[in-house]
Length: 114
Image (cartoon, rainbow, N blue to C red; front, side, top):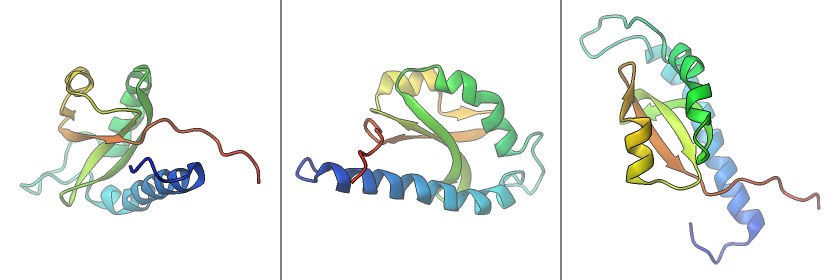
């Protein structure tokens, strides 16, 4: 994100990205239990995220988790302060058959009231 943006603009961009992930979640939920071959998976993506969120959130760089779409397929979104190969290695590329997408948001702070 360009450093020339003011704090309020940066916060709005981050909030828009998080909102986009939440909007994509209902569509992902419909597809979440269907594999490419049409077979049903053992767990819905929502159940997998719920089960693994505490362990993911234990990483100090992780700010949140959610469900989204990656290349039109349901995936686990992990919102992080900074992406790194080491963090990706620790978290993994997939969890219980669902792709993991690290989304770099930078630090998230509450805005001061206007």
